[in-house]
Amino acid sequence: MTAAVQLQQRSLFDTCAPDRQAWLDTAQSVLEWLAGTGDVFTADTLRAHGVPEPPYPNMWGQFFGGYARRHKITSVGFVHSTREARKGSILQAWRGC
Image 1 (cartoon, rainbow, N blue to C red):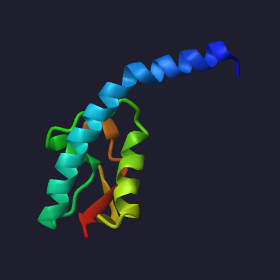
Image 2: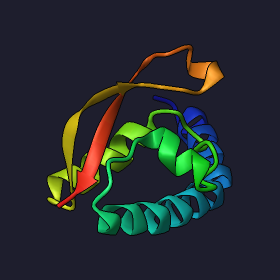
Image 3: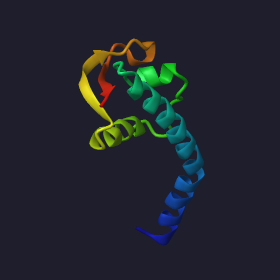
């Protein structure tokens, strides 16, 4: 990889970093609250509580996976999304540990 390509990629990441951190801060506060309720929740639940779409779509999986690896949440199965944009696709369902 050339130095110019590395600089371009780093610049792109740097411009997205504040949005990434703001999304993480919002998502973490909502997920921690939901995990404490004992209720089952999905990414759609976080959206319904005001968490916007992340800067990168794959952040949802990384986000939930990180909490699961730290034993803060556990998978309880799968549900169909009720969001029109998802067209009934499958979502993993979670509950706080």
